[in-house]
Length: 336
Image 1 (cartoon, helix red, strand yellow):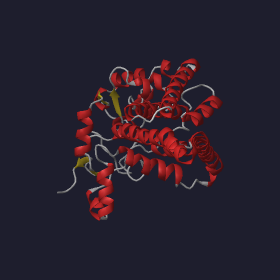
Image 2 (image 1 turned 180 degrees about the vertical axis):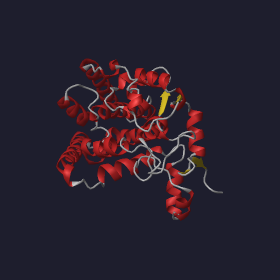
Image 3 (image 1 turned 135 degrees about the vertical axis):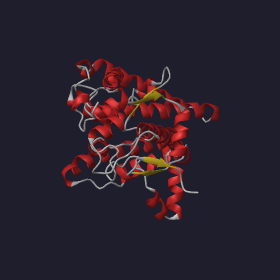
Image 4 (image 1 turned 45 degrees about the vertical axis):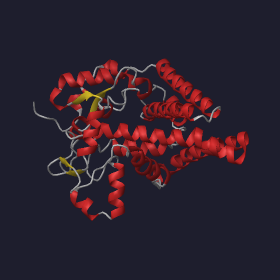
């Protein structure tokens, strides 16, 4: 079968039912995640015992990630039919992860989705070549080794995506007003959180309460989402493309994975690992992605990277996918 360069042949095999959105189901998912998040915060506020803090932090980090994933869906206008409801939900559910929605839309929807795995364009987990790595300073090499290690996804995401794109990013004039508004909303959320913590527990106790309830769950969110984005697009059998060789089919279909998690996994991850159909069409709501993935797999079985979510596969990728040759599409380890 000749490979297309665009997405039309793939879009044509997705059933119409995959575009059916349920307001009730979307609101239920949001309410459930907010409940998990609220219960985690109540638990964290009521204890300083480490054997309670650790599981509560994990729950808070997962709930923050779950809310963010739903916000990500709403920012794509995929969760509800109502544009206003999508806009409100996106902003509310992204507050615990300290993400400004309009800036996320610009970097994620327009850049990442518009140029997935395209050299010099897609900024998320963009690999470096052997020659680029050789020109790095010792500090830059150390940072790369940390961020591309098995435990480095949180460091990478918090620096490259959150700090560089959410905090330091200078908005283009066309979207500046909306981006400044959403960034102010996030800042106000964090400030109110801090003030309430100080009022509740005083200066020293309030700072600890702020760190305990907001900062640590945020850092765990960065680790979780950084890892999720990594496994979506980095693997020995997934290649990045030079600008001229890239096309939408290569980036969105061949360069994006379908990973099936264990039972209960979707409670917090909302089918985000079934990522290929999301890149083919951002309008598909998260709970319809499995149906779309199966239809695409049936139509184009040789081009879909599909497997069970596996720790061994992740460790294999972090071991072997360090540097990338864009001409051959091959990954390699660091030079000895």
